Image (cartoon, rainbow, N blue to C red; front, side, top):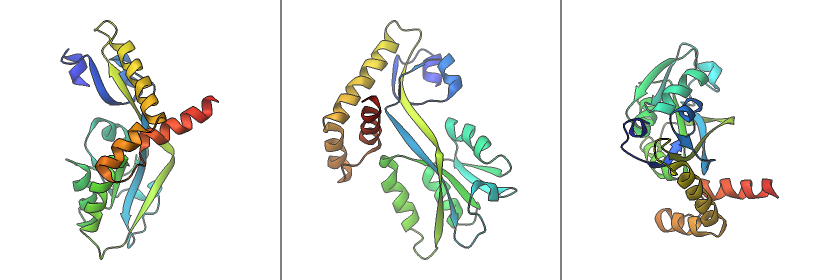
Length: 193
């Protein structure tokens, strides 16, 4: 994250945990994880990532998308898009053969609206079962105690998830208490027992 390198911030609330970043700034233990998947049309022969060899795969051109597309679709033609909605639309508009997506509960409404714009076009979705993109809280190595602050914030988020406050907030904004933060910490707390 350039904001850390340029000394513009001491903390960053959600940082995708990509290994090389640990050299640049502190990343707390995860607060949630994203699911990864691939969208394609039912009319194509694309059922899994291996089927994208020589095909156009659209992706949201952000740092982790740039990194993961090379790993998960090494033999595809990579088609960068300015956002997730454009990535989805590119498949329905035949500008790409498949779309690489990562999702959180917060993205789900926008994803649904994008897919709903094409009601007559059947699609399929491949879920990367063993691939997850974890996110933590970032802290500057240059600022004393920023790493500690990131870890303490993460612990407070765990407390809020455990006592139901995160679900309450999600219900307020999405009319659904389910969320990846609470789910992540439910599993985390069970594993610690």
